[in-house]
Image (cartoon, rainbow, N blue to C red):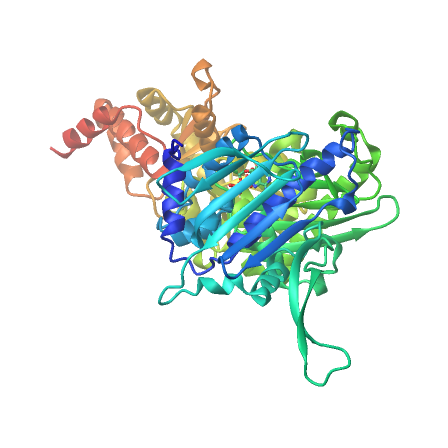
Length: 628
Ligand code: ADP
């Protein structure tokens, strides 16, 4: 029989499994049992609409057989089975190729990371077995097929007999090595322990013949071996158990297997509701965003069950977009088993559940923020941007609901995150507004001249580093009656009445000169004196609704070539800086030179304001020219 080759990437993964030094080899059993359970789910699901499948829920089971002489471990199920073609496609190629292609940031790329972070499925069996046979007969088919592989050099598929439908997997367990005891996987107690640890909630009985020595009745010390079939799992779905009955380890392993994230969740949320809607929910907040989270590929949604039977893998309607990172399960007795997607979408009950789930997630996040701030900061690092989009999306419909979950870096100690409430609570008595500055990074924001000015007043400044930030704040408009003010965008109102007066009259008296400079630059809507700048000679600001940073972001958006509004840029010059006198003198003596000064000052303001120079060549030539 001709041996077939594995696909390249499957081969890589397989090779890694065979040679893995991974300490959690035991997970292979969980993977195989979960596959068996999925296969039964598929057949059971079919039985709901297909009369030819006459089995009821209780007819299904998963069997484990240990044969110590032959050193084999068998896992069989009476699920949907696989055709020869399916054996080829499912076992010859790695199913979740995504898990192999995409390593997360910071991964060193060794096997521990990959096995640890992603479910590796069927192939994990090669961590403990040097040969695997899969005999499978699809429901309704006459013939069965046998898939055999001893590892990387390929596999064979041949027709064979099998009494009934389903799949039987035989693992030929490896010989014990110096450090590795594979033979433990042929011990009943070990298998029993593993089932309890990883697969207790599986909804079908996992059965195993268990042999015990029993005294022969009526004798003194005569014993015989008695074999009985025992069910090893409790079959209570983990989400039906009270949180206090489940260990962190169990949640972690369930979550890992279900959502392919073996780092464990940041937070587990359980909810049990009776009344307008009856359901239990088991929800997880991941530690990190999945690799595809911020792409179109990511599908939000919760797994939906009707009384213990899965009816939809990703029910998107159960989660608002801004909580799309939540993974989990909702099990309700209110929904009918064969409800269609279309009907489900309009189901009143589902809407009630979605509302209650959203409320629960929000209140849990608020609690985390209050009681475990470090954890919340981590959460916000991973998913905060999603919440900010939530504020902005749908014309700010949810802005009010989400505003207290937001965090921003600030000019405070260590640039730590602050919430809007914390900011307002820390405001000075005379402080009127919530000040913020936007830019590409904290470093770039910190050098903005206006930030220095506001900080010199003793006010805190929020640092907005995400593109969406300023748009979100604009939609919020105010927080606790305090307006948001971009330090580079609006009149900041930081001067005393006298200072204000002085600034105003200086602007009026130099109007002609300022207009001359504006025209010389040609790219600004005004040139003004500023009496509040703390140390810098110049800064860039904007007039009107569109800030410099927002204009920059709009320009980056797809479709921007068609034209986007640009900000009205203002060059502000520190009226208390020695440059002020120099400019006035030049206006009298050498207007040509003043024009050049104006351009250079504008260039300076752009540089420190984080705005790209339109014409760097002109700027550098002018600087050199003025030096000579
Ligand atoms: P995953 O289960 O995550 O998709 P696996 O590598 O574990 O990845 O399995 C690949 C595929 O093989 C499964 O998706 C399923 O279609 C099929 N399969 C595995 N085990 C069984 C089984 N016991 N019965 C039927 N199909 C199975």
